[in-house]
Length: 420
Image (cartoon, rainbow, N blue to C red; front, side, top):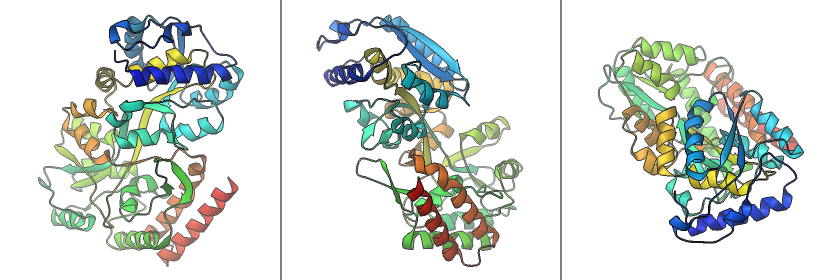
């Protein structure tokens, strides 16, 4: 197991910080065993104690063998507790302050803002390991300039091609892609799901290619509460949405199920979607390739990136053990590879992702390498309804002036941010 000097320093720092604020927890530990700053791996201090970890039903089968491996290597007993996915997040927020929560929780990065605002998670120090992750994976767990979670897997949307209909993609822009799709002679040139509520998530790569992100990011990668989708860039994207509607590329009648069914029927050579649909395409015997989404506005088309990872409780009585699992064990290439093999999600660690030999997952990895982490700030939750409603009004033609509708949406979003 890797145990570098910076990592050990991080362990000690975290232990001192959390010991000062700890008021409860679960299990016991021999923290003194980790306070001898040895440098050789063979002289690394032994760990003893118990670590309590919460995992929901969607991740527990993946985590069981990993936890067993950690127990075998360290001697630390891990009490792995399955929690319902609908309860785990709120239970963590409510129980950690009382000392009843776990030491570690496995979850998604967009929980970070809520956890930090409620004071239930501790910052971690990835040290030199941070550079070994996909940049978007680390940014995803960064809040106010500090990293709060250790990433292990990422997922995002990309452009999926039916190779039987179009064996090669030469398009470098989204307009060129539409032209290639039309040349295929299918019912749809490109399938991009919307539905009657809109779908800003699947539209986001096109929006970011106009340099109009939902929120701006500071130099650390943390999202600010400053909206980024207004101004001239936002106006240009709104006009492009209307153009795609006029060209019958976008249609509110095409939701996720309709887009998936149409692609499976060979009614389009292209669909923008995620790995949750490509499994079905492969099982149906379709020959597909996964590519980055071409730019519509001139800049890079950045899809949202979702990241899975591990958080440490701010009230853990076992910060050294928790740090050993979250920072020193979960970040190794061996463990990240094992998590991919067990769960099928792309590793967040670049070295492990590079070994993925599944060309479909490798395609998603390439498409999301420089993607935009889903904002985890609390203000994000209020944005979706304004966003999707306006986009579908532009696409459906209810908004006669797309730019005016977009600007009204921005004003309403700003009001929601100000009131948050």
